[in-house]
Length: 184
Image (cartoon, rainbow, N blue to C red; front, side, top):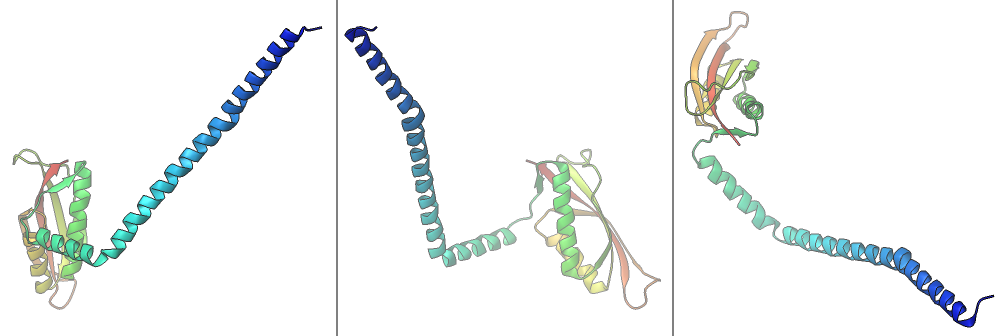
């Protein structure tokens, strides 16, 4: 049998243990969840305020983007950039295909699979070859896009010949060019 003092000590130990377990397994997890919930609510509120601001100023933002696009388009030609030479080559391929589409010529071959040439210039040059079929207006338009487009491209060879397989005024042309590449 336990004395009164021992019973009080056991009871106090039980109370302290229950309080400790309650704090460890009920109060602290509840407080963490509550804090996380409050942080999420604050973040969502901030996001909502930013989105409402964007919606309220949509016209101004569109005008600013249009102005910046015009500034970039009127600016000097730029070097190709990319994390790797393969990404820069993919960007060049996309630009050349876009030029062909805008010029209304049919691309029969578009090759930018070569490794960058580092022997001729201080910057590596990505070689490309474009073979396409089109009329004289499409060819001149394509060459104009290459010469005056946003990327700095250097034409190294141009061949234009009549296409005997196709009737009419369609010509077959091949352009070999190099694009300066700046790794990022």
